Amino acid sequence: EAQVTQNPRYLITVTGKKLTVTCSQNMNHEYMSWYRQDPGLGLRQIYYSMNVEVTDKGDVPEGYKVSRKEKRNFPLILESPSPNQTSLYFCASGNRVNQPQHFGDGTRLSIL
Amino acid sequence: DAKTTQPPSMDCAEGRAANLPCNHSTISGNEYVYWYRQIHSQGPQYIIHGLKNNETNEMASLIITEDRKSSTLILPHATLRDTAVYYCIGLGGSNYKLTFGKGTLLTVNP
Image (tube, rainbow over all chains, first blue to last red):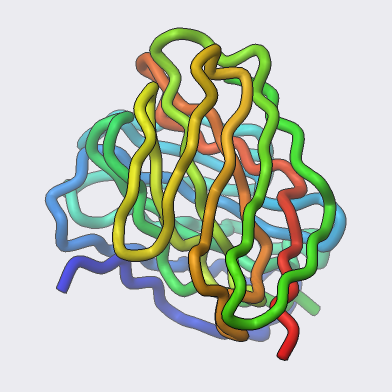
């Protein structure tokens, strides 16, 4: 089954404690991206990757890092999380602009 | 990317067709019209997309006007599980970024 898998689904942690949210897709997609969703602000892109070792900033990249060492994985790294990064996060992947992108089920992060 | 305009909310009776409009008057010739929906904090779900021609799949139909300035998503027999926020997005060229607006909250009533 084609899917995008995010882990963890839920996490409560404290300010400053480094965390990584993993994202893996099994569709051999070249394009992967991360979004965050906040009430009243909608879905905003954090980072994206067009292929292995190619990453670029989206609209709200501050405080985040990503890496793309393998095609299937695109982890989102919060080196020093802060409360304003409390949000619902989604990973997505796709292959061509004329084909749909697939989203993960989301990761709800709470930074205390 | 094409700027899209959708009504903030719509209601539909269960079993009836839901027709969700979208204006995208600035869409360029190589931009597809995509529809996604999000059911209460779940990941956005792809519904359908099209370039010029009308499209139909197992979930919905997409009607695009001849001038491509607007489109309508049709859910032929809405169910309670179709209650969601529906997003109309223009996407094309070398740009893969899905820009989500506020969408339309469709509420299907029993």
